[in-house]
Image (cartoon, rainbow, N blue to C red; front, side):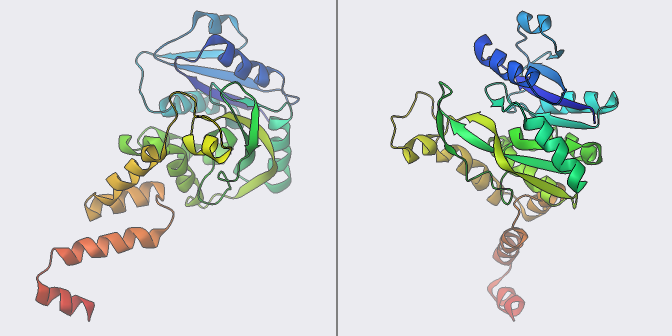
Length: 269
């Protein structure tokens, strides 16, 4: 199985990006690294053993377009699977091998790993229990085979307002696709967290620039405020949110609010 690892990058420091790249080079299962610059290419990257793409402008989409470009290029050139690794994170040496073995055993179109959470300096915090394979899976933990190729483009047309919860939206898209899934019950991805809740969980001082719950609440408020037809369109395209009943309830409430009191009473009967 030919595997490519796709990393979108923006303005990360060279030493952080280098750690990411070296963790791919160190894989015990041979794979190729595709780096996609989101508007700010680093000349040093062109000297590394990578495929290097440069997007002419920053898309400000949390790396979505970079993942699309890298993935489609890989599949078009005959790769059998792609994995994803954000520029500030890194893999265990056997991450790809474990996922290839899992795919071989199960035949799954999509395989996922677990992750551990780390401070900005890279030091270990805890094993993540949020990226659980049900409501949410972090993008760094996803391994897509060629059977999942039709899902790749969904990163490109995800509504801008949903980018802050893009991982959850994309996982919803995968879950509702009907493709067979398999999960590796080991943490082989190391994730640098900037989420306030993770530091509060550890009782630690918040680093500068932490993201709070408002970042993820805002997309859901936007979604709930949409007209009913638009909510259904998003659900049909992405399966988001995963609980279909919650979408249907909002649609019914909106429809009832537009009726006269007599019509509402009749509709409820």
